[in-house]
Image 1: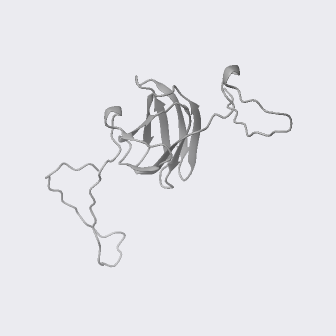
Image 2: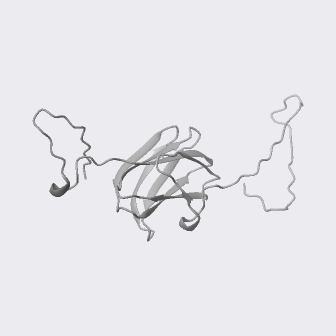
Image 3: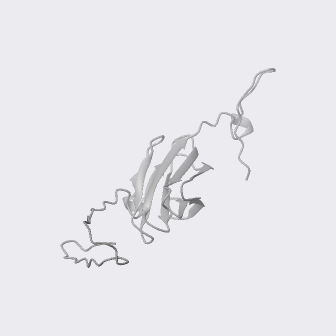
Length: 168
């Protein structure tokens, strides 16, 4: 729960199910939100560097900022910690319009490959149904094939090339 700074809280402890009395431990930890709750306070996600975040509960939302370079073919991956039921990830453009979104179930990783506007800032919004941890990764992908006839890569007879196709 979100505690008010400086407030005093009391815990009531009772026996459970008529079991024998015994020792107990109470732990309170301060939660620090390192991601930012708005696009203006978003944590900048660096190309190729994983960022770990924590969602405090259903009402919490985290934002990460991604700035594309000259190559705007990117891969975004979001790993949902095993304890989370469902995580929703959305990519927003600089105006706040949703570009794409996807769901990542607990204990899995979901990813999207996106062709975005070069040299632009996008925001990744992460929400979960419950408190838990997540990891986000952004990588620029090399577009070796060219996206138009003018930028196409020429192959000579007998040469091989790894190609990437995205169905739209």
